[in-house]
Image (cartoon, rainbow, N blue to C red; front, side, top):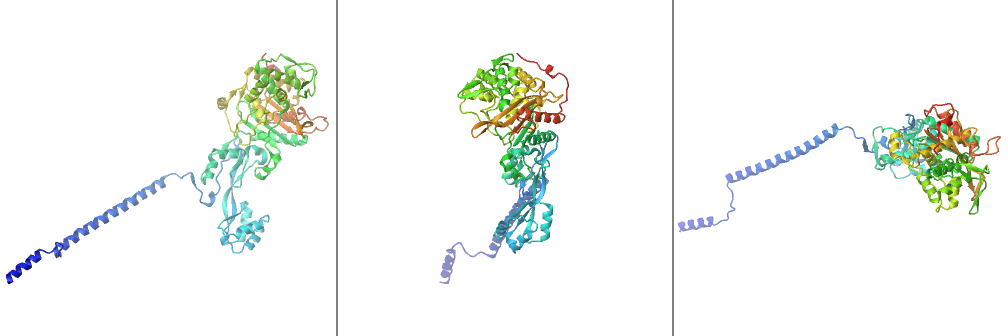
Length: 580
């Protein structure tokens, strides 16, 4: 029985599940295997971390070896305003530059007593808006501007007050050394140093404004932008315009000096002007840039374009004559001459005597469609293309009729800007090529790529002759007062009556003189306009020949040397020939 019990207990033992208790030897083997796996995991983790930080370190070294970035996010206090490039004239004279300044700010959450802070600030800044500042200092905000662009003296005085919660941030301010000398061309910036007028606005449009809008600033000096202006000529032009305004008691005056072969604007001024260092003056309505942003009926200066049109059409020759003995009556209007000769006039006589009748007959011969097409070809009926943002669109009749063509022939019925009048005149002088104006330097070769032929060279040659004839003393031409000995000036006057209460008034005029020199081989067009001049003392009239023409002569006399034009004496008319 004991033996059977032993056998039975052995069977029961054999029938137990496999998950029996491990022996000490078996347990030690499992523990070693698990330890090896953990060690491998640790080694892999260490290797991964090592690779990760090695990559970061390599990247940091790479960044450290790079040259400094030119553009960065605005974060530091000295990067609040985007830097602007200097504006220079063609000779390198500074027209606009950045200067460092500071602005006053407050942290209202740190202001202990707003009333006391305001009283202290008022001792340095008495013109502060007390109510507005109190509202800012009492707010729950963490930052408020109090005054932008302080002087160093103001900063020093406010620092001495020791007001908690008041601080300064460096900023950039635009400075114009010449003040108003070239204000309408250079333009100005706003309080945030962004260009909002003139070439300052143009510069922003070339990418600088995009950087500012994106919240970026430039850490290094920008390359200066050189303009086509000659500051010396600009000064002469503005000075003579100011003298003319005073002498003739005019409400405004403006002028331009334009290179006929490149389209460069060498000088352009419009008075009254403003100081861009105090740009609020520009908001006054009489500070308009009359040269490019104002449109006017240009009067008899348009007779130059009508004559060129007639000659270029082939329908009229320099040797032709037209009947100017009687007035032209059309559509209830009477067309007559200011100082009529009451006889048949040749083409040169029509030009130098400024005959409305003769000019109207030439326009009628060309026809309405041809007249409109010619003025469009010269760019006088479309918006002028140039860098300056302030450019007005010319005005013309919605429907051209015969009466429109006739009055437009002598400068009434179409309003255009004086600058594009000068540009069109340059095409009459330079051999017949229309070159859009530019306020940036441009070579003759560059100009040739954008020049558009608009008239025949022979027509240009004949127009030079007529312009010279009209400004030569002793010929009876209306532009003889513009003559300057040695500089061979040619030109055409324009005395346009202005509309008052819906009617043309002979007492209120817009005068102009359109000139070119040296006329045998023109290099420059000079145009001067004088708005509502009064008769000079001792004179009974105030026509363009008595005020605009001598003003042009004075500008040429003073600026010719700066423009590199040498005087030449002799019989100037012998240098010109006609093309019949």
